[in-house]
Image (cartoon, rainbow, N blue to C red):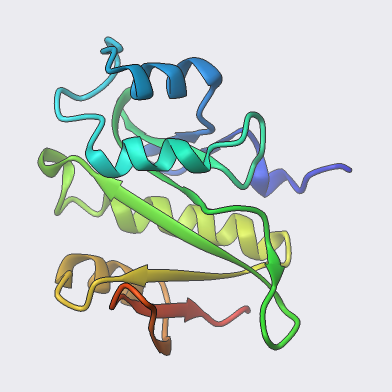
Amino acid sequence: MTLPPALAPVLATERLRLPLWTAADVAAIRGGARAPYWHPQFPREDDRDATTLWRDGDPWSSRSITVHDVVVGSIGFFGPPEPAADGTPEVEVGYGLVEAARGRGYATEALTALVAAAEEAGARVRASVLPDNAPSLRVLATCGFTDLRGSNEDGELVMARPLR
């Protein structure tokens, strides 16, 4: 299967690079090692949790968010697209930044790139966020996540971006 260009191993935006995690990245995150190109606050607990979703070489897997070649967070899908209730292929996305990188538009820029890649591949994107996480709710709203589907078993709001 040939992947659409949007799902390349490294996605790039004006300010960011979003490379897929490698086995070495995952081993270092899991093992508590420190890579010289990681921000001092990386990895966060959520980044360590994301290693459980990682699949080697899978474009629907975890990626680093890098600014000036420094990893400041992670973003990725929770698995490949699966048919939603309406039959549309759908993926769930998660993302996060180290505290020092927040408030600069990086999450919005990274999510915009990943959503564009998913949509080019024909998949709709959804996200789950705690109702009191105002910064993440703003990111989702800015990126066009307008379909509120209620909440999940963890009390998170489930939002989707209508497929364009």
